[in-house]
Image 1 (tube, rainbow, N blue to C red):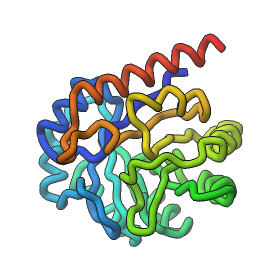
Image 2 (cartoon, rainbow, N blue to C red):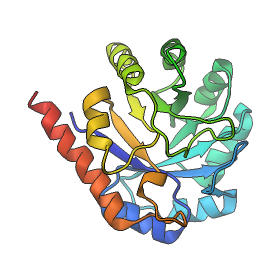
Image 3 (cartoon, one colour):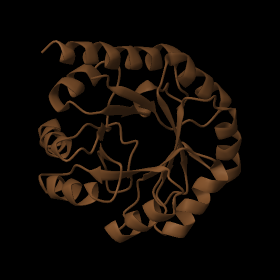
Length: 225
């Protein structure tokens, strides 16, 4: 199993260039927010960066919007390949997004704040193409820089694997802990944002490359276990 790597919070041409040079499989543009994010872009800026991305890399819209039509409209404007529904939305909304998204893959974020996340992920799995497990705080739906209880995420990944639904692990990951996270949870993919940034929020090539390399090495190790 090859664990894929997404670098989220792309907000400049330099960020984009660095993520591509690091070998990321996917990149995330954060737009349409209801909670604070330093990396939020307006639709025009996100669209400009999306157009610069080369073929064969997955462009993901990460949005907090809670209306299905608004989510799909923003995805159309930005020109992405997948939609990460990261807001506090109902399953009905996720279902409506999936029906109208023009075949784009839909990723539903589930915040792992306790064991109740297991049931939430199971419910979400029926109406999306992948479940992303993230940390959250009172004022942030992502980009917290905090890990959560990986033992809960491991249970979710195991249950959803049996259902044929991939799990993406996020929340406080960085080049130093991603190998341990992969070993503990065995996700389909890992997602990083603040863990590969400098103090002013710009992506760093060494950190991004180290993150992707660690994910690949961990994939090889899982394959021999």
